[in-house]
Image (cartoon, rainbow, N blue to C red):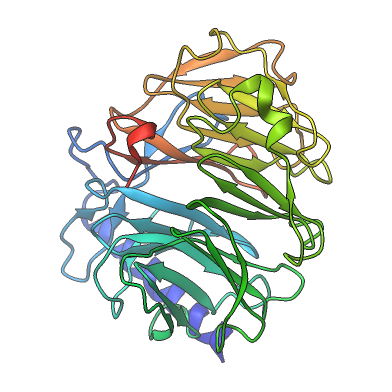
Length: 360
């Protein structure tokens, strides 16, 4: 039933966009002074287009060009479906690769820090707002609060689902707590308490026993689904540890490899965080601010990173780089490569002074 509902919603969404496009002479004109929201490249970052249109029944033009991106993810089963969390404008989704976006209603106002989609049921979506978690079982039509934290000053910073067992959900908090649900969020238990804010939580999609926690000062890894933890911070000693840390991602073409952004620059580990080495960038270490990074999920030698002025690309693992102008004046804090068509890339942007002050 949910799949039929989603299909019907997608058809309606497409028809609205179709009507809007052709009623305006075959193209949508977006004001050039709008440079927020989402950008999309069809040619591996050689050029970019705004992906900010929102179709409406009354045929007026609306956009998400003014929103501030706080999270951007693919549906694990369908790379044409993306979810965009924002700072002040709620949640948006697209079923057609960013051609048109739909606003989600029935969610409370607030900054959306995390969104996660059930890897086996695309109708089931989880959203973290403040100290609460909400879920929808019908493609974002209706929502139910499944967790409310008694500590109002604590916020949820990450929300991750086990790829192999989607009943298992992890929630990371600003006070260092890591909670676990084994029944789709119906109940929760304390998995571990870290001594600093959890800035990012990662679960290896190849082996979900492997979990990484990044705090402001430490890198921890569990090899047994969070039952025990190893401190891997010492391996980062030569690269400033986690000073200025802003993001880490998996290099998915390898079994347990990571790429990390910190104040030093861009570094990588091919052995699950035990040892690290730096990429040979065109700038000196500690000289530029890198906002986001992306790696081709099928080719670990194809890497992208974005600064406040340019996007850099290598196809040989960092030996040679080419640079392209950034299509926006805002900070490109989210960078995605389409896993089904690696020519296509997405940027999510936000107004920010410096990563050290926090994106949101």
